[in-house]
Image (cartoon, rainbow, N blue to C red; front, side, top):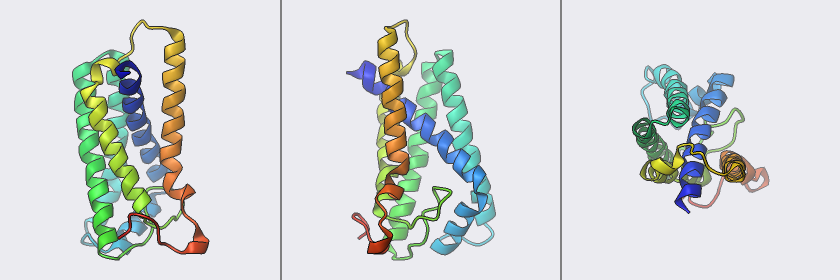
Length: 184
């Protein structure tokens, strides 16, 4: 089981970091506008945060992939631990914004979807996957295993990454307003 879950968990985290980076680079104003509407950071910090977030996500994703393909268990554990801290920060931040009733856009996609408990729950899921991936890092490294196992792990990683990435958008129903489970 760990030879399946370890690489899938690590893969989901790494691909999600790269997708987050790409999303922020493709639409740099989305995160900036979301942070302004959340009204939690000083105005002069927002430009720094909007640059730092995609840089950190991109670096963690690239270094994590290099660790996987280079066979560096220590490198992968460090990247996944840092990713757990990053995603845990996201989850805490989103939960805080929701608890204060500020709302606004999520800032995690190029599209303008409202902040919801689903976004906070997704960040928490990424946190838990990063922790699991770090704990199971030895099994996340490529082995001279069965090609069918590699295909299965790859397909599972791509599927779950896609499902988690689009979860807040898929569960948003504009007809119902901005309320969603986990918001209170």
